[in-house]
Image (cartoon, rainbow, N blue to C red; front, top):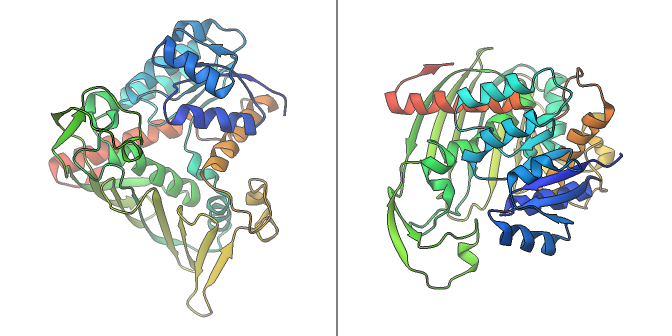
Length: 382
């Protein structure tokens, strides 16, 4: 795969993750932009990146940066993605694509018909066993899907003293737990099963309506590893810590999802179960190299990720032998390989091999229906 010059916008938690994965995917990172010149310079030095940008305008003007990865707070995704597309850049944006469906619909329309790739980083699709599940479901091995269920749980906001910009509606959007992690589950479920949501019924809860914010921002996920004393101030929170959603699908199947960011002991746990007319399966992101397959008339199975045991579709995304586990960083690498492989193939009329702006827009429409359902306490049809 030939290299494409990539600029990473955002130097917090996820930006360096993108840098590492881009390099593993064979791409050349030409520069990075932080919140200010000091952060840009520090990140560039720490990550051995040639350029430390001083502004987003400088990124857009850099002819060496053919592609942009947007790893910024949610409220910046829409204006940055729009400017990047208009500047002729390929764009891979962290989710959510925008703050509302009006913005995301505009981005979909803007990117349509251009010889530019426009993607959203739903990387969880690229666990090898998640792809194997998709292959088996789409091949009919589970039969007709009766129902799906699952969850996405974390504990990084367990205490009222846990704080990050994501808890603020003006920074991340009106939904938080559902939008931040629930959409990963919803995207994965749809990608595996092909099911389309017809209606939702949701119940959300803000466990900590007041949190204690440090005077001076802290880096994402750093609080538990930095017990130093800081001055705190109370701040009102409108976004949800927990959410439960019932789903109706267009083919008559049903589903349930719950998410929580205040679930002690669950660090980053996505669970998905699919019940079909022939068999069922279950997968858990905290044990991503095993997939349970359930039967009625014979013994259940436990498939351990091994390229020699996977189908042709999933095998191309499994790079290590059985017993050599692949995890979160590998999903980033495989997502980026799919994205840049599509660009280098040069056929922009071909079906995308990566999560697109349109996929990102669908998730935002779904989130808005979930919020409306909770607010009005009723089923909402999409």
